[in-house]
Length: 365
Ligand code: SAH
Ligand code: SF4
Image (cartoon, rainbow, N blue to C red; front, side, top):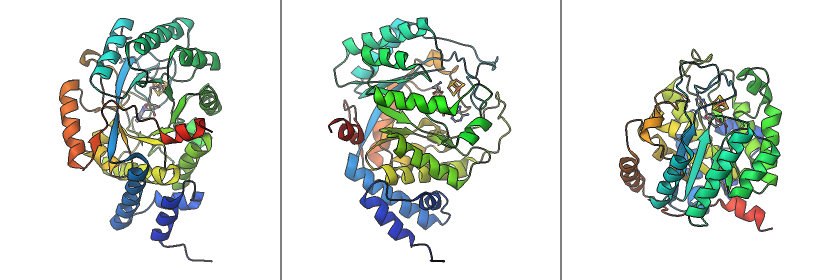
């Protein structure tokens, strides 16, 4: 048997062109143990990020517009059967006002996220909200939806109303693992088909996974990264699975320090395999370490997603426990973000939607 190539050779090949790594090579990248190897992986990924996206970070304001959910994902605090949650839906006008405030604050995009509701009333509510935001903001301000699985017709209506992007994590590319963390009636295939529909409809496509799931292997993580490329994702948002005490997966093992290291390696390996997509330094990373998001930027991420939801609602949107900035207002978050990003030698790209080059390349053909 041939000896595996040195890590430096793998990193050079991955840096030269996207899609250069095989599944076993990706599995190797996400299971490195020596600190110097992990540092080399992350710095190679940061170099690719600097080349494709510059020394800048794009901001996306997150609005958690409601926590009512018809689904029952075994890991999530918003699941239907969690009776401990006080349910809310932010009134339409307030959602629009918050989104306009995100725009005026100089963020390039806003995300409307909620539990999954499939109903004509909800479809119309979102249509009205998206139209109002569209007409009150500049044309390049990106409106991003993260509202779960819907029919092709609903996705088309929201796109027509003015939505530019959609985020729908596949959660894990391995459909067997997906079944283990969802009850009956939740379908991996439907989620995948939603992603295909969104792409067809011209959305900028965002997907992602949770990692650190019970029973997950490095091969599973490699297949997550290959899935992102195969589905043609423009944007990736990933985070560690954080057990929530109000869910059936409350007792799952969790090591915050290991989760952060794995998160940084996943970001880096994803950047090296995809090159020109957007990768978010997600809020969950900040739960694991105060500088988790900055470290993710230095491992290849290029987007931060500060929470811009009115404080009075934030307490009730707990996908997992310990979400940061629960007591901070958006203004203070803004000032601290600028300083945090400057400290790592990068700058926030104010007013720039940060349209992923991957999307521009595939739509200009
Ligand atoms: N309902 C929509 C959007 C809100 S949930 C949807 O499911 O797509 C957004 C994301 O939160 C999910 O995709 C999942 O990856 C993440 N999430 C939920 N529970 C979590 C937990 N316990 N730990 C980490 N991430 C979690
Ligand atoms: Fe609902 Fe999304 Fe949570 Fe699943 S992950 S229970 S769909 S909010």
